[in-house]
Length: 244
Image 1 (cartoon, rainbow, N blue to C red):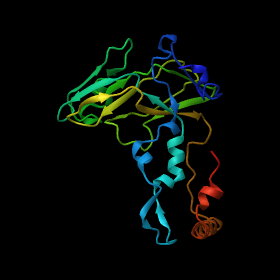
Image 2: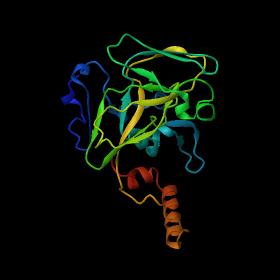
Image 3: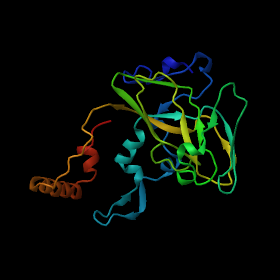
């Protein structure tokens, strides 16, 4: 892996770098658009049912650009190495065994750190902590939002979300996760998606929402838009959606 060849290496908002010992060893982050979930990849663009309004074959999520744009946002942070996980019938015992790596891949948090029995862990199982060996550096005024990969449902765990001011914290950020599947006994493989990292501009908007009733002009605007959507296929995609 030549780090200088990463497509986002010259990105002026966010960059990823690792210790020289890990170059060509650990999986690299990738644009999230390169990690669409398998269910979405296998989905046909049209269903076997016809749309009641147009009599065309109904489009599936494969043709939904809001979903595509959401899944394309940010960068996928990968699992650093292979891990074998065994759990019991209620996940009160979670045993994660890394292969013989020269670096850490997985550790544990104590379950009291997430509320114990009354929190997200309903038994004695400890949440996992996936170790990340990539430093994420953002431009001044930019933080990084870490969330579970959008619309991925096949992982047996779910990482917790977090926001880090990565312009001021030039250090690796690890990813705590809650295990979901009981009686699990299988491998997690290096490179599988853990979280999506999305650069966020800080203080870019007023965090107090403005709430009011709809104006007549806005009601008219919605009515006109609905008529255009009925009259023209792909109106949002072709005429309203910003080019990505």
